[in-house]
Length: 291
Ligand code: PMP
Image (cartoon, rainbow, N blue to C red; front, side, top):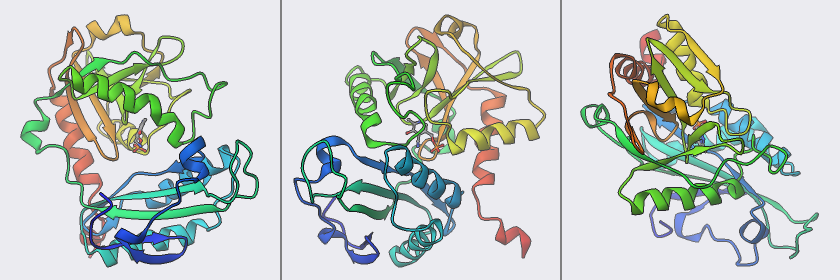
């Protein structure tokens, strides 16, 4: 991934992709003092850019550091980089981390670095494949108690258990894993939020110890606009059996139906199909319609 052409925005400058390097004694690498975002551009426009930028700044704050750029500066950097990279549809990855000036748990004076990379990451599936649904394993690790980690931050350190869980699922032939939280309640997948359907009502866990995804909030709005009831509540793993539809949602995953979680099967149906379509329409730039 480090040998591509193009540019990366690195601490205020546009540098060649291959030259955007850090030192091995980077604090962010040793102690996970890093926060990041994942965004998608559709038709040359980054969907909900400001919400992602605000979350990046807030994630840094939760890790005790101040990102040395304003939200306006980060938004402009993302937009300018998208233009320079020349993609209409792309994935946008801003990241901020403590640098290599001091080594040790304490790194009060280390520079807060910021970089943005943009690459082409097509939707995981075409609509037909998507409606077949993916298969999820049950993860062994659980989302931590908010008293154990800053669970509202999109912090690199919190992804350690996601990568372990996703690799374990993939080794067994699953696409992803469903994680419970520290209490044993249904939480989310390794990089996406989860929704269920039963008797025409949509259910999703309360994001009190994991990321309240920007896509999650968008999907709840879209579902309500369609007149569906959405219950945000505690969901126990014993209930999985009773749901008829299940889908994941996130910036990268978009809305992706689930066909199986361990021993339980779901049939992607009308509500999943509707929300896949509504989300695909929602992310398209609105300017064409306004002209
Ligand atoms: N949970 C986790 C662990 C994630 O990595 C993501 C993707 N950022 C999400 C949920 C969904 O968040 P969003 O919709 O803001 O992309």
